[in-house]
Length: 125
Image 1 (cartoon, one colour):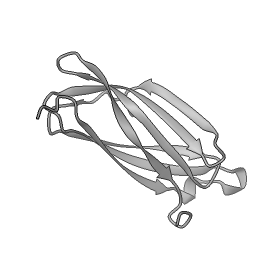
Image 2: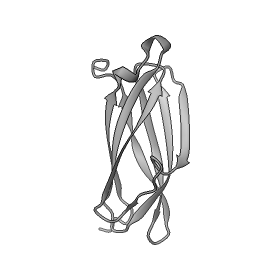
Image 3: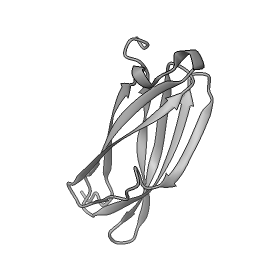
Image 4: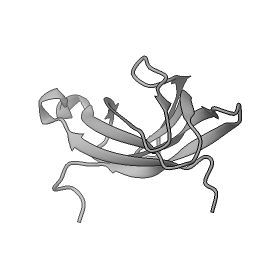
């Protein structure tokens, strides 16, 4: 089976109580993402697109070049790990999106970032 462009994305979320301001409805979260190239061809992450939604339904779209100022290249089997953050106006929310990639053979494709939850550990049951 050929898996030319198979990008696996894993996310870990941490609530940042020391950076949150509940009185002003600012809930801060850090997330660490590990991107692994499980395919047969190298690829470079060129762009990112995020949809960040709070529990009231308000959605913010973030589009930009690379991640944390980098456009990492991943050879088959390689991983890239980075941390970033988001501030939302409710206790819980979600994030999802995609990375715009280009393979070593010039094919552009999107690597989907599965939806994940932003929440304090005790807020979801």
